[in-house]
Length: 238
Length: 187
Image (cartoon, rainbow over all chains, first blue to last red; front, side):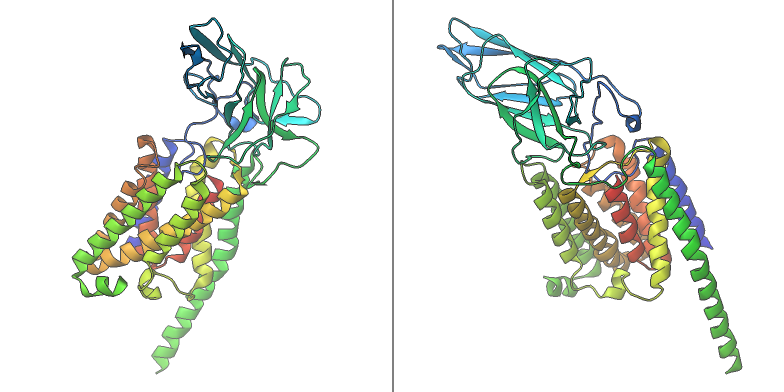
């Protein structure tokens, strides 16, 4: 009885502690910081708007410095430049701006799973820049990074390298414009275990678990009680 | 190494097992943050954590096939409890990439074998159930300091306490393993 009471108290303590932080018990597999959406999916809950970024890159001796540019608050897209990545002719500095597109284009045949970001710079690239996009654990993993010089399209895949970190997709670009990660919408989402599929599935999973416990637990408990009762009776007979 | 541990004083043994488990978890977290290392670090970390339990008899770990049905049902119940706050709050199930799902299963089994298995058994031998419950919960929480923001540590500690209390109340590790795996796959 004491044991059951302590277990019940631990369940209540956990419920209170987990209620204070979303999503509750969390073992570190998803991104710690929720994705900031331009157009949040229904399952996202509360949402903060994605941020913009600005970087000023020094030009020393006619060669642009190595640098990274990313949004100030969420770093959901990071573009990295090697030394001499820009055509820095006649410049002392180069500015790079990253801005989330306020709308969410969904071109035919492509399903974007990230915001669309515009990256612009005051000088053109002469060496590829490394691009890393973070994506949410609420959407299937993207297969490619897509690029367009205009948000209306056409969008083309610029590929994807092996991901360096979970929930990131890497590629490189030689041009500035609009970038988003996604997958061809004609194909199923690549390489994902869809535990529930979003929407209202987590409550369904929990309800199924509870139902399984009730359906399987009651007969087991009754059987156990009968067995122990029989054992007591046989001991009495002895 | 398990032979060396067996010959030491129970208190020293418990401290050594705790330090070893903590070091493995912190090393795993550090390696996990390196590029291209996350899945490998999780799987290797789970295997190494599981190896800590080698040499400890299965019954002292809380493993066994007796009352298996009840243990499985208990695991489902623990999974439901761990997921309930998330289910009420968001209704959303995150989608794990396939490799990460395998890694999540490996590390959650390894963590249970290490914390509620080997460490719990060593602490129980050294100072009884209260020390085993409180000690394994404290080391479990400390092990997650590097991987979790401070705000999450209360929930981590409460989950550790719940799993350790189950381990004590039912003398069972099967249910904590099942519940932990379910929670890690969904969150």
